[in-house]
Length: 250
Image (cartoon, rainbow, N blue to C red; front, side, top):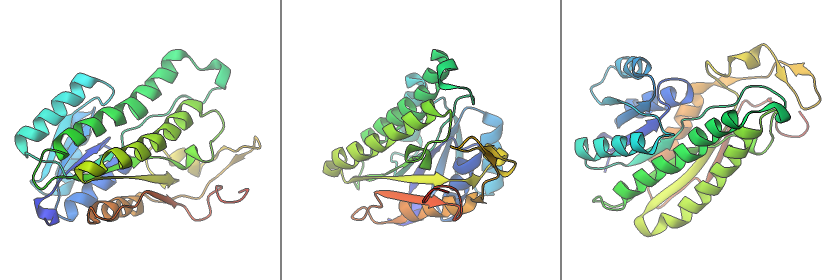
């Protein structure tokens, strides 16, 4: 099956890494379901693609009923799903750990972790029964899971959990020819990451400007993972701005 016959779902597709990945998948021939909460942003992505293969679906990944409706729509329109890029994510306000509210914690968990679980489960249900059987799930992890930033407990904890989800899906998906891998991104220049170019807190308490990379490099990496035959899997990929403070001691 070539890319022109394949269907991909990208969550958080209205901006940032999700937008870039969706456009990259569209460029290589995929039909792409654009899932996100803001219809105007999804429509902008669809228009930017200049194709008729982009399909916006308003979705809140933290709500089971919204995710269920998304996958019902995918099944009815396409009858299959070849790639899920589990990308939707949020972070908590930059406050001291002891001042985080339960609601702030829960919101990050609901979107980053529960949302990824719900979408992965929906994808598996389609992929296991389609012909040809199988597909690929790519989870958006984060370098933060390996080297946290100050005051990032909810985000960091959920990204650690995504690694556990990735490993479990890699094992549980084998019997259905479903591959699962994870991409850990460090300092891609998006709207949300723009403050890093002006300075962000470091582990030693200083504020420092951090090097960034073009978000399209991340999108190309997602396409590379998606295009591999199902007999091959990139289990974990780290893609980062070369000189960002991650390797060594910064």
